[in-house]
Structures are given as C-alpha cells and as structure tokens.
Image 1 (cartoon, rainbow, N blue to C red):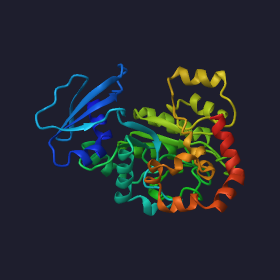
Image 2 (spheres, one colour; image 1 turned 180 degrees about the horizontal axis):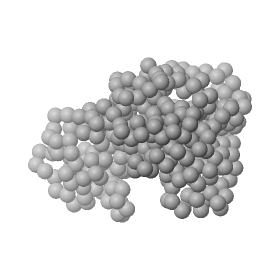
Image 3 (cartoon, rainbow, N blue to C red; image 1 turned 90 degrees about the vertical axis):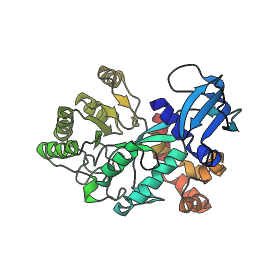
Image 4 (spheres, rainbow, N blue to C red; image 1 turned 135 degrees about the vertical axis):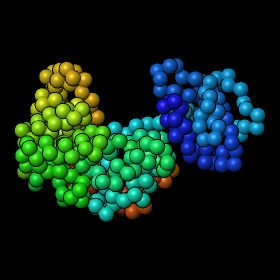
Length: 338
C-alpha cells in the first residue's frame, strides 16, 4: 500500500491534467521501477481509479471507459524522499521568522510533490505550526509532500546555526548552555512527539567562535535515546563527526568536508549502522548558479526557481563576483571532498 501511495503521489500532476473529468485513467507503455528491488516492468500499464493506483503490470486489462495516456519511452518511479530539508525559512535569498507560515510551507510542499518528492524531513528550525501541518499531511487532508521533522533542534549561543545567516524566531531553536538545559529541551521536544532531534556541531568554516560543548551534545543524545528518539548531527569536520559518533549519534546529516574520512570513522559508522546524509547540494548552491550550467535554461529549473533568483542568476556582475569569491572557492573544495 505504501508503494502504491508513493507512486500515486508522483503521478499527481499527470492526473490533474489527464483525469480531471475521468474516474479511471490508464497509463500505458512506461517502464516502471517499483522500489521493491524487483526487476523493472517494461511496457507497463498503471490503472488509477478515483485518484489511487489499483493495478500495475505488463498485462493489466483496461477497465471499460478508462482514459488512456501513452507513456511510451518514459520511466515511472516511486516518490523520492528528501532526508535533509528545511521548511518555511527562506524565500529567494532572505530568511525570516515571518516565512514560517501555513501558506508558504504548504506551497513549498506542493512544489516538492510536483517535482516527485513525496516525503520531506524538515531537519530542525521548526515552529509550533509544524505539528499541526504534520498531522494534516500524514492524514492526507491537505495537498503536498508528507513531512517528518526534528522540532527546533539544538544550537549554541553565539554559534551555529548563525543568526546572521539563518534568521528565525525564538520558538524555532534551542541554544542550551548546560547539560541539564539540553536535557530539558529534549524532554520538551519529546513531549511534542518529535520524529528526530537535531544538533548543529560546526563553526561554519571558522566563522563562528564556539561549538556545542561535548557535555551538552552527550546530554542531548543520552536524553533523546532515553525517549527512543534518534539524533542527527550537522557536521563539517572529520574530528567533530568522530566525536559525535562516539557519543552515540544516529545520523550524520552532512558530509565530512575538511579531509578524507579514515578507517576509524568508517568503523564508528558501521558499529551502530549510522545513517549518512551527504547533503552535497549545500556547497553546490554556493557557486553552481554563477557557473550558469545548461540545465538552468531548462523548463524543469525555470518553473521552480523564484523570479527574484532568476533575475539575480542572470546578472553577469553577480556571476563574476560570486565565482571570484573566497566562499565559492571553499564551497568547490568542500563539494569535491564530500
């Protein structure tokens, strides 16, 4: 059933245009990869009745009166999952607590779904509205990708995530200064039934003067595990990654980017089957739009990008300034290492 629901979500945009007035639609001729590990189904037929997939196969009979859509030469896959996103934070290049609204978040989730991403993990910086929306999206009563999240998350005073870059409200982040304050923050998030806990353990390339102290992130992990909640860590440096792996973290939420990983890191990952979310796009976006690659001209990108960003990206002066900046050079090196 989960497979059928995710495949159905990927086809939402198709159904809106092909089955608005029809109760039954048949997509014929596509190659279908169902996500189960089974061999792809070539020349498949997918039957959708009243907005739900009811049959997939190479020899599925057509129901009487079905609207038939030719998908020859195309491939259909299950819905994609974003393991590391943030909702309601940024519009164009500006972050603001005013962006954490029902209207904007649902708009973002509908955009995700239109582009084939049917589940999103909002990995921290969430306000109280998150839980209201999560319940509705889990129930399917509003359109858009389903969401899971890490409540507010744990940062550090005068450190990550930097307020100069990520402008959020007081109810979107904890910055505990002691282990007990950290435990209390985790207990509050657990009481709200958060899906995960997030820790930011990074100086943003030396830009910030402090990191979350080891005794604080150890308290976060211990308290989270006491409440049966997994913990994800934002990291950059190999030594930070190893330190938080030793503390028992469950998810490394960025790739190691300062040096190649070593055997100790790999063994620490394997020992507890820790998940690794490389999030390569984080560094890529610091320079790739200035490079003006061919895919930026394609409708797939043009229809998704904010109009203000498209104007900026097409400005030759901005392109040259960005490409020449130290930040872009650092991001290129970080991406290559990742």
